[in-house]
Amino acid sequence: MPQTKSEIPQLTGYTCTLCRQHYPYLEEMLTCPQCGETGILDIDYDYDLIGRSLNRDSLRRDQDRSMWRYKALLPLEDRDYSDFLRIGWTPLYRSLRLVDELGIKGLYLKDDGLNPTASLKDRASGVAVAKALELGYDTISCSSTGNAASSCAGNAARAGLKTVIFVPERAPQGKLAQMLIFGARVVSVLGDYRETFNLSKAAIAKYGWYNRNAGINPVMAEGKKTVSLEIAEQLDFQPTDWVAVSVGDGCTIGGVYLGFRDLYQLGMIDRIPRILGIQSTGCSPFVDAARDGAHLKPSPENTLADSISVGVPRNPVKALRAVSASGGAWIAVPDQAILEAMRDMGAKEGVFGEPAGVTSYAGVRQAVAQGVIQRHETVTCICSGSGLKDVANALKAAGNPIRSRPDLEELERTGLFA
Ligand SMILES: *Cc1c(COP(=O)(O)O)cnc(C)c1O
Ligand SMILES: [Zn+2]
Image (tube, rainbow, N blue to C red; front, top):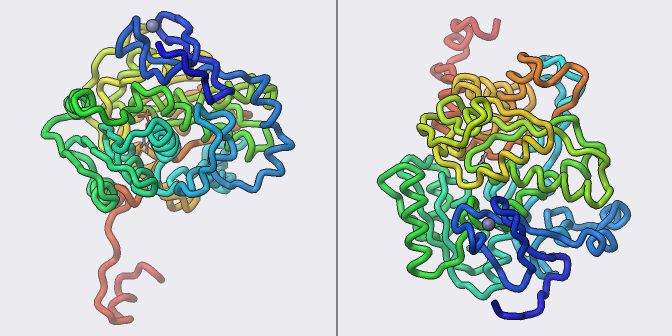
């Protein structure tokens, strides 16, 4: 290993999530050299050092309304990121109606569909693009069910990087349009997500592009953790009892935990919220494994929530740890409940999420009904992607408009407005 001195002083090293081997930070690492591809790494930080520049006072003074306000907690060199797309600092809405419907003490909706490419994935893509620039790559590549790809393409376009994207054939049109408009070279793979991932892996190895595959690259979960940093700060460092997030590969939920863990390590919060991981019953490898107390088994990919239709999750360790270490829970909801959640969040709170984006809320509703979440508790529900990305399913959830000729009498005859 080259003995180059780290230019990222807050980063102390890596720990393998499988064999627990620690590696000092000497160069970039993707996975554990001993365990191979499944040896996903954690990134270790020097919290004493970070706490000197990042604390409640410094944040109060910070005018940067983007995820870069937390750059001291990211595995990147200390640079100016103001030319990036504006990622993060998305609104945290206090629920006005659904909270009463659920009958719980408090509910907040974190609308991450308001990121620049309209999903939470921008948090990871921003860090990936920053890292690719730092390391001198000119092309960045990933496989994705859709959002990681469109987000990678958008953030790379802004930075002047080229992108090569591998998506399964079933990716919704909205996401496909985004990637193509952002100028990515898009390979639509005639197969499922697993096959798509494997082709991207082979191509990345052959052509030497920067690898944004979220399952493998440890910096992705680090970007995604900024959602938790924001939730905590927006709640004045008194986070809710629960945080609910939908789960595909497991990188997002893993990141959600890391953000709260960082704040806990820094002494900025005094407890880590319980994390509720939600999947569709049509594709629920994590929920199945948790229920059976067994290892993850490949699951069919049979849900309309395309972003979480991941039969073979690539980040199982971080995802399982997020729930177990936080005292959280796993829940699976049927697709019908996802469509209902889409309609309810839209009609009752004005937040329009894609199916995977509102799966979190469907899970909260079921968790309350089952007594997993209790009436006296509070919940933050992460809406991870915008509904405009998948209009076909939105219309399935919402039904059809009223048809009328441009004639008031005909409108009256419908009887709908009497
Ligand atoms: C990717 C994604 C998820 C799940 O994230 P994973 O890291 O794959 O678990 C949830 N919702 C949306 C909208 C996504 O794009
Ligand atoms: Zn290892």
